Image 1 (cartoon, helix red, strand yellow):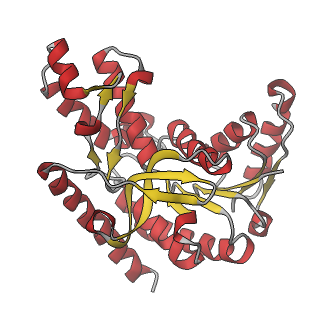
Image 2 (image 1 turned 60 degrees about the vertical axis):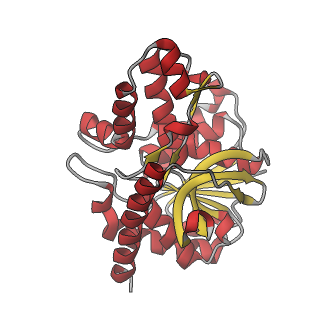
Length: 315
């Protein structure tokens, strides 16, 4: 049976457990430092199996060694954003948490495909790979799937079309400087800009959607007042896990390690990738416009600043 370990039993961890169980992806081990939390959620979720019909086991524990021999590990541990906070405000606390988890993964489950959700995402997945020594293709960050899903929803809502007809993706760091790629957005296969002309929709409407996508996480944090998004992030990470477990060769944007692609080296950044049974099997390089290149440079600078800062903290 496939083993999935979820590190962090908060809102995202609990939702991940439920999705993994319902989708029958394998046995789930839910791990957290808070005594009773993973055990209680695991018991509650296990009892839902009588209704949902899944047979996979869900185990809750405070013992990080229980991740041993996992096929997939998804990390959500760390402080969530609160109103008025940026993702970057979490750098020091979450950097130390991720370093400890990375060392545990190195010891107990060095062959797993590991997905990081903890913010600030691009810096955290860098720390995770550095201290876990995981192969770079097996250590990734979940951001692009989420950011793209937000943009798809906003577009479908604004243009009054089925969300299933919208294709788009987002490049760059998981922050306010992310780069939604309007030029690669289509509606039912029709390039977005052509669709706007056909429907006589002003281009200014799209800029508002781009801006809302960049601030998508903050909008939810402000509405919730306590905590941050968890349903869409969990769904996004599960999609990445499925692509790996079922060798789907699926094109998904995520924070991947770059070694020359897009002119960048030795850093994690959100880019379109192919995920299959070997993890990140390929990074897709798309042609960018001059304005998109400028925006990407700004995003890269932000990520590099975070990585530099967390390196100093963890020395």
